[in-house]
Image (cartoon, rainbow, N blue to C red):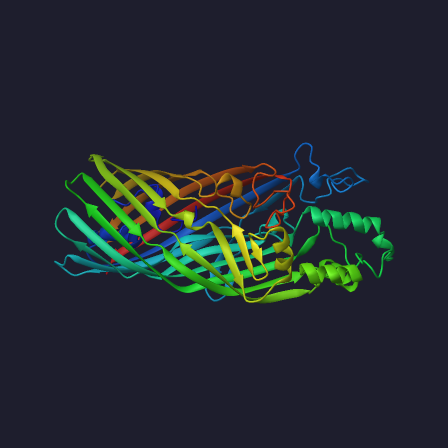
Length: 515
């Protein structure tokens, strides 16, 4: 869902159905063989304006009785749900980018701008065309306000691939066939900042015991054998804040393309972009709340707590943990093919089908440079996903298919009017949906135009709209709202019905000229 949304106005206006009709110098991305259509020396600048609206609703379903513990699921004084997230609404339209060497950059409120640019050279009479370009083939990022109920998944995040060099060559074999190949040298960054909580039955039991011990009085009835009153903990209380930032500064992959034009009214194209294996490295930090740290310090100060912690490697109550972390991630391979047909001197129709190997993203496997307290606790309940120094966040993504359709009406020798539709299947299975990535099956609607300013200059524009809505019933996705005692990684909205909505509006302008 993050692919091909910030690159070229013509491609978006035609529903990204441009493998047989690549747009200008950005053919280095869509189909390198299309570079042979560019004569002389050309320069191109593209600017995409993006407005993103992300909403999430958290609702306690009928019969909501979290963990089945009497007195925990509702406030005895008001009768309202104790969970402050229940029946609440999350909203953000704030865009974030990943700045290499810096991390998450929160942009000012309102639309964001995504630039791209390229240059091409074809000597007179030559069959070779050389090009280079800067663009972002994959980009998504946003941030929420501090008190937003969606802050647990997450408060801010960015996933971005920036191609800063793309040396590419197109070769015209004959009047019918052209081929192309290129190398993309990119930066990849993944970062997230989020508050953490663990609405798990064990913390529910801890809160009930604290109430039974009358911790508000400051007395410890079982001290020194057992002490539970060092800090207030419960299923709805914050544990702390996590920040993680990993990147790969040089991530190469390659692309291949071919075009066939047997007649002046029919064109076929195909392109392939290889995968890129990355060992992303960076840093992490966890700031625990005073209540969380104080609770475990109190537990470890008691006789039973000290023995239990030694056996089970329970947290000691450290206020902060930080260090280095690595993530092995594969940028997925992609194949696309399509046709462009002049059904009338005034009308051209394009159709494409594409495939992306997102099944490579089965899980995010983080490897830390030291043993962490929260992982020592998590591994007891979820040994398949946590060890003392590693964390596996299941994704279960599947291969993605997209279908693109475009129509171009040649209003005059200078003006082309365009419309497009792209149908995008979700890569996220139903049992892995989450608030962090509110991407379901969706359609991308676009209109646009191309205008030949003069003999050497081409201007392209687009206006596009994408909308995705997902409903996640309680206990249907163990990445967001499961209530089982072993579902500790990571279900911050346990037992709640969740509904997400994503709206994206994009307006782009492209300027290409010969020099």
